[in-house]
Length: 301
Image (cartoon, rainbow, N blue to C red; front, side, top):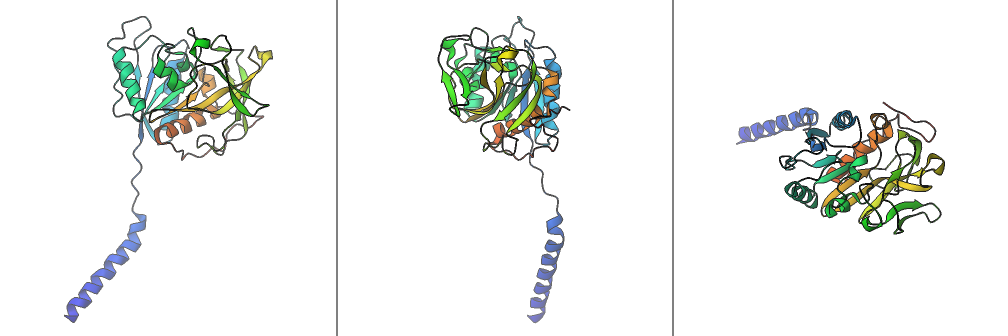
C-alpha cells in the first residue's frame, strides 16, 4: 500500500512539474479572424477599385480580418444575377454607389444587419439607394440622388450648444466644397472607436461632405469637421464619423475616403480598422499607431 501511495505521489509531482514548466509556454490559439465582405463595382468615383484593394489590405494587416470582395456588373446592366451571399460573414463593407439591387438581395442585406451583422459605409456609399427605406435608416444620413427635406433632417454639430442638431429646413441633401485638408474633431471621446485618439487631427486632402440628411435615428456622431465657407462649404461642423444601430446590427459610417490619396491618411486607415472591429464585436482592441496625425501635421502612408 505504501509503495502504491509513494508511486501515486511521484506521478502527481511529475504532472504538476510538467504543467508548471510547460503549461505557461504552450502557444495560445489565435482568435479566429472576422470575415469581411467588401461590395464594390458601380460608383461615381474613379479609382475605387484601387481603393477597395487598399481597404482590404488595411483590414487584413491587423490580423483581425479576412476580406473577400464581390464586384457588381457595370452600371446600366442587368443586376438580376448579382446575388452576393452574405451568410458566413461578420461585416459587410459597402464601397458601392450605383443601380438598385434586386428585391431578393435587398431583403437578404436587411436580414443580415437586422440579425446582428456589422456594416461599414465608406464615403459615396452613403449616396446610394435614396428610396430604400431600410438602407437610409442604416446609414442615418446620406446625400445626392434627389435627397431633400422629405428624406429627413440635416444633421450637424452646433459648437455653441455643444450638441448635435437635427434641422428639418427645406433644401438639398448632399454637397461639398473644394477638396482640401481639414481638421477632424472628436466629439465622443469615450466611444471605443475614438478612445485614445487626439481631440483634433489633420486629415489629408479629401471631399468634406456637408448638408447630408436622412432619418438620423439611433445615431451617434463620433467626429466632425468644419466645412468652411471659404472652401465653398456649408459653414457648419459636419459629421464625418458616425455609428448607428439597426436591429441587432452595428453600423460604422465614415464620409471620408473620396480618393486613394484620401484613403492613405493614417487617420482614415486607423478609424476604418477600429470601426470595422467595432461593427463586428462592439469592442476595439487595436492600439493607436505612434505615427497618428496631430492637429498641425497630417500623416499619410
